[in-house]
Image (cartoon, rainbow, N blue to C red; front, side):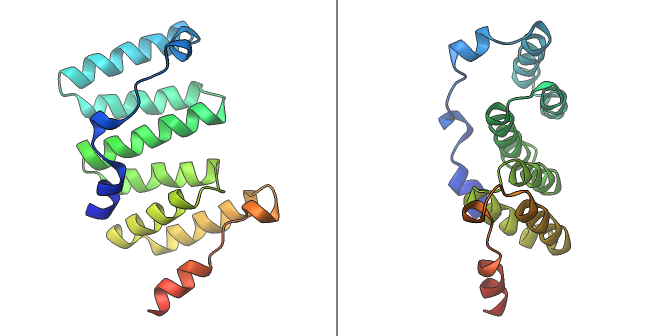
Length: 149
């Protein structure tokens, strides 16, 4: 678990939201953004996570959904220390963008930590099926090599 957190870096090192992106938010998204900030400042991190989930329901652009999912994974790992919730959020990220190997590797590390190998397998199979073409199809070869050692 420590290696997952170490690669992520401190929460303060994450990029601030783009001003242009903030201006493009709907009133509902702006309200969620304001509430997330307010809840974060008063230590209501579970409410922040709940608002991320609501925000994800509203978002339609994959690039932004991917960014929000990464932020939510960090919140679950770094602040709430909820590895199972981080695993499921990361699984959503893998399914959204199956070509990113780093997400799959981190998912495998979390699966080892929480003993979720069966769920990991089903996510990787579904991600493979969702891959747009052969080049972005996730390889499960590294998983076989890891288990053999």
